[in-house]
Image 1 (cartoon, rainbow, N blue to C red):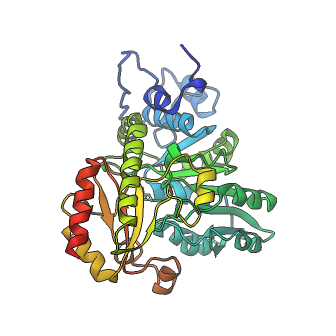
Image 2: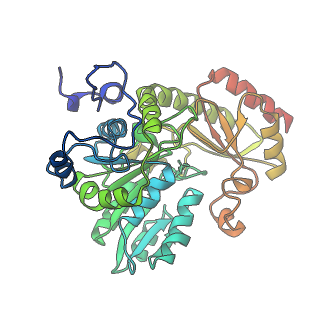
Length: 394
Ligand SMILES: *Cc1c(COP(=O)(O)O)cnc(C)c1O
């Protein structure tokens, strides 16, 4: 057997982290149990005081959840991981486990709506101030540093306008300030971007998106080096309880097996759709990280190995045109999920970013004509026909 360190991602995602029960089942076993029994009282004592590393309670760790965490570590090149009930549980616990009252964080303004709420509204309630910066402007990151800055937080590409933040450059600024960089890698996926290798300290995912990839379960995961996960994050996780259910971990494990083929196909189709939209007169702005006309194409090339499964574009005619386009689509469905096998379109200004004040929304480039398309696994020709027909209907 070859060493799993030499395996390519596709192999790791099929075999990595598998531990078999006494029955030697082929597929990963689903351990739907809250707790574990001990042969005697002495064994229970040893489990609780850490002398015996076995399982204690599924809020702390569970064999199915551990398999998912181990497989994610192999994919990400991380030392350790903890799976959470949702992407927001991952983001919130990663941030809360890193700060205390009196600390300061710096975050990019272009964040998934709920992440922005946690940074701007939740953390300040507990005495942690947040400075929001334009992620693409490195001078703003530098200028925001204070003596008590503990964390920097960003996502790249961003939701929904697919802006790119230079992860290595922000990691340098964070480390110089004595802070840690947390990266939300949902839009890029682990296949196309490795934030830890670029200098980030913590990576978080909403597994709800590409990792499940078939729209079934919520989930999340926090990955970092073993020391931080075990010493800093695990006590917070174990006692506050954002844990993933074993059932969801089992669904996510099966999702990981097909992740590379799904991402490759969805990215390929998204690239074709982006090229098609770029040539259409009804489209006034087209943003796709795999294209040379992306505003930060050079940074994208430097830190990403592939494009994106998402395409952002703006239609002439604002909200009215955008709504008519969405309503005319027959294959692509209107929904706010992403990374799904089904192609999904979302009008951020009236849905995911409805609660963001209009001035902030416009500053982020999210006007009424902007749409975010998550490209699924349908035949790319069928999708192009659907989009062409809907553009004609505007
Ligand atoms: C969806 C998403 C989240 C939140 O994940 P949930 O699983 O919905 O809680 C966080 N960040 C990004 C970038 C997302 O797309």
